[in-house]
Amino acid sequence: MHRRMTESGTTRRTILRAMGALGVAGLMAPLGVPRQAGAQGNLANLGPEEPVDVTMKRLFAGRPIKDGSSAVKIDLPLIAENGAVVPISVDVDAPMTPQSYVKAIYIVSDKNRRPLNAKFTLTPAAGQAFVGTNLRLGESTDVRAVVEMSDGTLLQAKREVKVTVGGCGG
Amino acid sequence: MAEIGRVRIRIPSSIKPGEIVRARVLVIHPMEIVQRKDGKPVDKNYQFINRVVVTYLDKEIAQFETTQSISENPFFTFAFKATEPGALRVTFLDTHGGKYEGTADIKFS
Image (cartoon, rainbow over all chains, first blue to last red; front, side):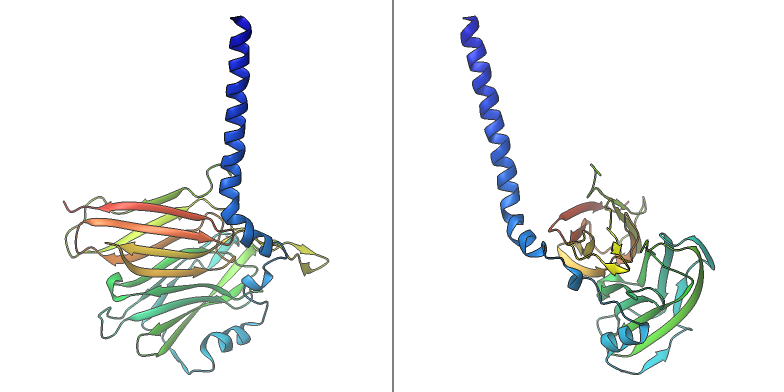
């Protein structure tokens, strides 16, 4: 009796272990293929390291950018003690109707190695062109918000922020 | 790191129909930064969130493309027009195929 119990215990443990292994294998399988490909690295997935002029050219292909400092409000601290977390919010004073709305907001920090921080694509359902996030900044830099309207007009506003300790590690 | 991918969504406690509401979302995620060796970036599959999709009433209302120059545990605020009660869903996708989702119920009071 005692022996049988031990035996059944062992069996259960074996089964559990087998199930665990299967579960892990099952989880890994769909991820396995892209991860293999990605094992070479995905530096291409990152934005290229480039000066800000090149980024602007890549994103907007030399389209004229108007000064939008009256319509585009950037909320950013004057001095950021920690470059790893710099709160920013961008508020665009523009209607959000299906006829005319803010299509995208780009946040670009001039002196980061990869200047494009984020691109926010919006729809009229947003009701208001407002986005906020936390940026990583390598050093004191100009941060610009470029707003693309639904008719293709580009507006830009700029703010400077002083960064005491850089947040990009490398 | 155990709680990587936990999504938190904060919305105002009382919402009126037709009101423009600001939502704040946060996800626990390392947002790996580029490592350097002798000044050159190490080529590896960095894990960071590169896409955020916001849907409301099963309709996509915004999409954010993010890079590594967004802080660890990324936080976003955005506005949307609360037209009907329903679900506000925010999905975060990372470069390792991770998908993290959070929902908030929009109710009128």
